[in-house]
Image (cartoon, rainbow, N blue to C red; front, top):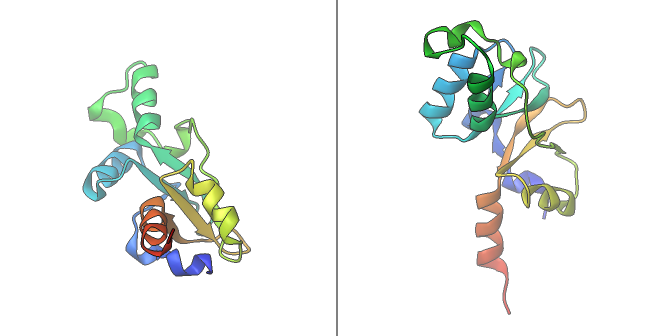
Length: 134
């Protein structure tokens, strides 16, 4: 099976651009009920994943930062504590499965690292639950 069959396309998921603010990140996570969100640059290339924990640590560790001035902090200024690896759309299932074991979702990119969408761990588990027989 190709990993393409698990792809949730970019048009159906939320992501942030590197130009987004911390306020926009928090609003987007809340609106989409995400705990983490992919971040892409102006060329559409995947640069990382921002998590709720990253936002909380930034808020806790930045003197003078509060909810009223979150719009002043670019997401590029927020340290990402965990780097979610991406997988190429041409990768083997084993590559994607290894990443899905440690990540809620796996960002999928093309050969130029342009973000194509993501694969949710939940979809992988559901597929194997339906198709594995004893």
